[in-house]
Length: 268
Image (cartoon, rainbow, N blue to C red; front, side):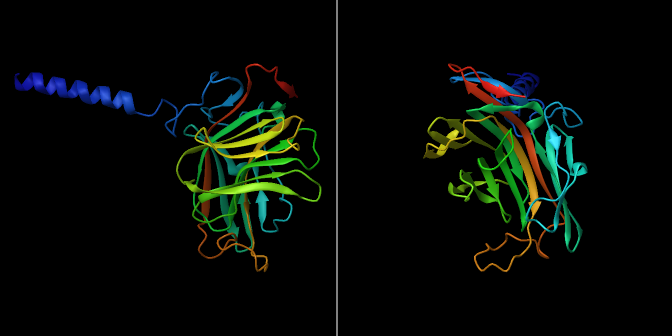
């Protein structure tokens, strides 16, 4: 084989490998949202390929979160750029932080089914986040926290189901996932059972008759947490001098599904 022919073959092989293993176009996380399949029909998806938040699907938070005296939600801390939704927590002063949050209540809710969020988050002491389901009709409970963390190195998260006005909960912590890297967190709601998944692999199944039977919307949000003086408060769960000035939560895509053998019970 001539030197020229060898070079041509090498270029072709490199091109094939790059095409084969390169992330899907417009997918910063390297994975596209699944469509219909595996017994599921997709009922909603946002891949955040535009330059602004799709207000037909999402509303951004404004105001102070309950019980968070130094944290303020601001719509300007929500952006869509580079193929991702970005929520940015930023220090304003020693006693004030601006953070971001979004709700899919604008586009309605769904009773039962599967919700998936492809995401990653920067480390940050005291910068909490939650990916949650909340009832479309308002009121509390129920609340399904698909993934939440109060701050720190992001090595793990907690999933919690709040099901009574006395704040009775069912939950578990996952210590086996690095949330500074891209992962898909999901929950499946069906009568009598909640199933939590990471990268489409179940890691926690909770059987309970309290599973919500009302339309639920999805929220993704950040908060800045203050030291409370409670001796049980976790280390790195409150902002301090070690907390970065900015901490970003990124979402590549969000998708919602219903079982193929079910008619979706949704509401607007």
